[in-house]
Length: 131
Image (tube, rainbow, N blue to C red; front, side, top):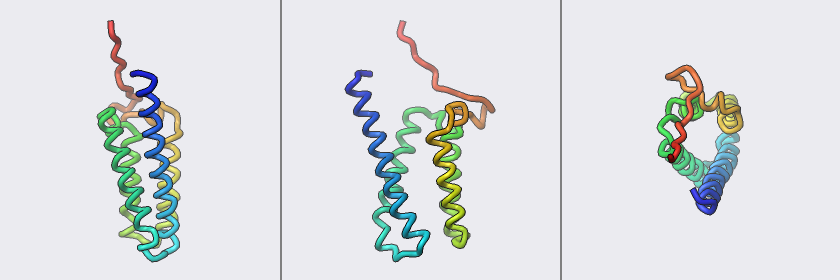
């Protein structure tokens, strides 16, 4: 991959993540403090759209993402998010749990993020060597 392509890809992923975090931060205030939904709904849509785009990007980069902790925990976070509907009185605790999982997914050691729940060990993408 050329250096230019690398930087375009890297900055695109970082920009998408920045938009996602911004959407989450803005929408969460409205959700947690029961502000009228019209005031935070666009932020929520931004967060969900960018989240879906990041998931698609990860899956297209490596199908292993689906069985690695970084992918599995993303689906756990979505389940916790869906729990807002079932147990709305627990929104603050659920949201805090989602934030903590997000930190481990994004900043945890590679051995944790790349751990495969299927293989019960770290699984990485095989490097293709041109020979």
